[in-house]
Length: 162
Ligand code: FES
Image (cartoon, rainbow, N blue to C red):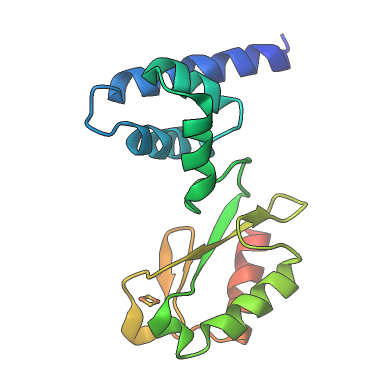
């Protein structure tokens, strides 16, 4: 039995509606709902926006504005691995910008994007709590410190072949 794309879309709407319904009573529920959707469904799809707006009884533009304002929200499915590079001040002072430029060149994508083979999503982050050991990089939740371009290449190679 095959599952139709429209069935999947309907299933997603149902899940987004359930998440929003579960959290709608929180004070300031929009951000927690968006985080929960991303956590549980991988990203905040543009099609999720009107569903959330409907549950919260607010304007679609308001939800859209928040999703696009915060860099945290991915608006398309992510890659199989996620690489996050810290670009905050302490890491910048020890070469994070050069590392960031190296990563975008090496992967051929910008921050917030995913490689065309969907292997790796590249994200920027502003402090990973590892400031004394910058430049800091997180690969699928594992923190790495003092990451040089060569070390980053090795980490990217490991996740690309995982
Ligand atoms: S500034 Fe990069 S980990 Fe804190």
